[in-house]
Amino acid sequence: MVKLLVGAALGLFAMSIAADAQQKIGVLSDEQPALAGLNFRPFEQGLRELGDVEGKNIIFERRYAEGKNEVLPNLAVELVRLQPDVIVSIGTPATRAAKSATQTIPIVFMRIGDPIGLGLVSTLARPGGNITGVTILTNDTQGKRLELLLTTVPDARQVGVLWDPSFPPAGAEFREIELAARTLGVELIPVGVQGPDAFESALRSMVKQGATAVIVVPGIIFSENMQHLADLTVRLRLPSMFYRREQVEAGGLMSYATDYSATFRRAAALVDKILKGAKPADIPVEQPTKLELVINKKTAETLGITIPPLVLARVDEVIE
Image (cartoon, rainbow, N blue to C red; front, side, top):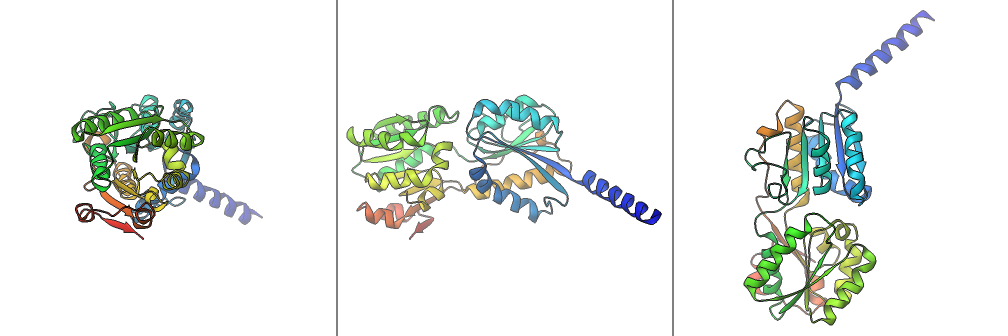
């Protein structure tokens, strides 16, 4: 009996030591759990390749706002109370909430367009404070998207812009499209939406006003409903420019963007450095080294579009 008690006590002691040895990663996301989980897989894989395995030497504490940005400050405070070794924030609203909740716990952000413009870091080379991360955009990305769309559909002189005005980064990216449109001499027909139920009426409104192509500004509602939106653009015969390759896989015409999976894997490397003692202030914010142009061949054929040689020469992948 005594041996059994001693054995049980030793077992509990070993479990306690193992638990103490695990480092805690807090995850704060503005997305739905399903989309966040899909995005998070490359990050987890990147950690595993560096020897950081959930249940072995790390544990996750996850909090999802499910598109309700107003709950993010409370979720961030919850995570801070748990005293994680690092917080991973996904999206601008989540990163702002995390930064407001703590000035000491390291934060690594993902899916951020302009961290300097948003006031998250001082510079990319020396972010300062307790925050660093990986951006998803380079300068003039939205302008290049519009330019590529017009090169692919040269007759389009009126282009619809589908955007969610309530999504914090959307305003700056929309202004970038407006600036590019003036340079390229094209008229924009912007329509704001705040939910998938408004997608069809918004696109039909664009078509009615003369739009013969559409560019979609990054936003959570478009990522979470990519199949529905891609189907609508094809049904309404609107050549579309998206911001993620997955949207082209769903049936959109084209995308010009960084590889989201690659950015999440790079963020894993930054987290690993912090877990090993590095300070966020000394870790430069990483930018994409390359943006990929992806085109859906079947959609182009359905819409009767012949991809110009100039565009084909720049294509990184053609989805059959």
